[in-house]
Length: 610
Image (cartoon, rainbow, N blue to C red; front, side, top):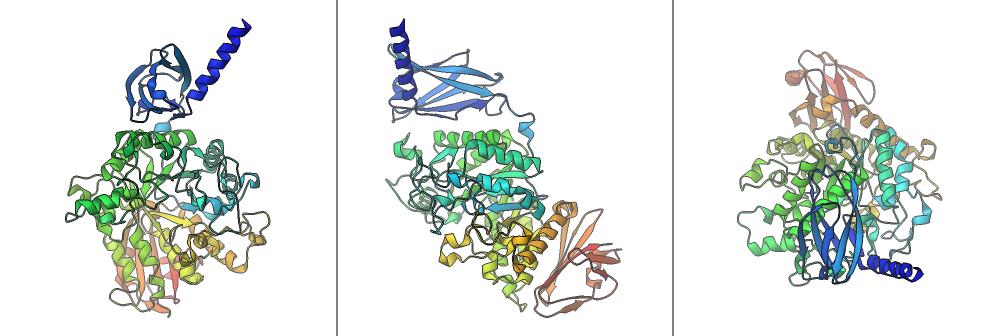
């Protein structure tokens, strides 16, 4: 009996060694995506016959040219939550692998994503706060913590975000977007985590999968939302699967490496050559980021299941998708539709970094522009990069000209007719890839006031980049590390702690107090969230617009002229109607709408009409 027991233990250890990866690691019952394709990875695993217990139906077994992979599709429709067993058999030898269908959270399908009632706070995960210094370095990954290296790992982590959630809530934040948190095992500059090496595992220097779920839980306790930064276009060159490709065409090869030409217009340009389109879409973003082939059904299914797995496991409220318009457009459309079919109220914003409204509108769901060629991305939201382009220059344009000054902002909104859902646009003054706003404008508080008031009161979903609220700056010309500086006070030995009022400088406090007052006011303003907009052609570099609904009207005046301006209100009677006064949200000062209004140079009025 002892010999038999030892023999069984030997074969059990061999069986577990046979399978190195199972992805997704588990699934859920009652999912819309019920045909689950499970990838098993192990040495020569494809040589085995596969069966499964509990009467579960195997709908397909797909093997590839690489014998270390087998993809098994099972039908989970109408199956209750349960554990079952896969058996792998080759002649007389066999081994097994347990698998689970879990119970979904109640009403998981109908989770509500972020929308224009939210204010999103973008965090560079490695640079916000170090809540657990013990995980700054880890033996399982190559790059270790080095805060002295601006392009190195500094130690920001999930625990650091959780510790400061109350700070964010008090600032007026309702949704948090951390840059990617999955493992990135590049040797250098892995801190940004856009070159992921395992998309089912949180990077140990950020924490664990359980920590990520805890982040969602703590956000939801505070009525806030968790947005995952998801990457569909590429992985990192250290991804375990890149080192042993399931299929040659899992990634785009030419053969080998070819860099993208970045000409995203080739995705819809009727005059584009096929080779230029291929070089844009199939070329690699950079040499260390192999380009995934979403036209390969195995790849597309893997990415789809991975995205849904994270939503369900980590209880997510939305995605931001990196480099969205570089993907195979038919593939990424199917990916997006599968997710929104699974979660009808879930929101996804795609990074479509273009400089023309028609080109950006092409990528939004149900676009009339895309319909010209019968294309629908199914992408609910896009980022308003043309507005960003204007905000990066306009407040230094003191003199109103035909194409300079506030007319740039006016003209941006004049093209809103191109977008099928104008409220579902992400609006921002900066992010982790651009020059910092306060760098461009040399920490000019008045210019910051104008930009933030604009973002807080126009259509769409405002996004604030971490540290803007305390005047943080950074020059992209000095490298990405400079626009991704550490938030002061996020590390134990920081001399300046901007997370607390007593630790802020006078300038930091000024920026912070204004930001908090503005966005906390916005939280409960349905007229700003979903109301209509009427704007007036700027005069003397003064831009006036109104947000209104049946119950309320807000009047916004932005004076981008360095000189004080006085104007009559009769011109705006179409919007003012029977209102007689306006109270400035920022100063509590009241204005008689039957008289002329005066406004200081380079300043704003945010008037609630009475």
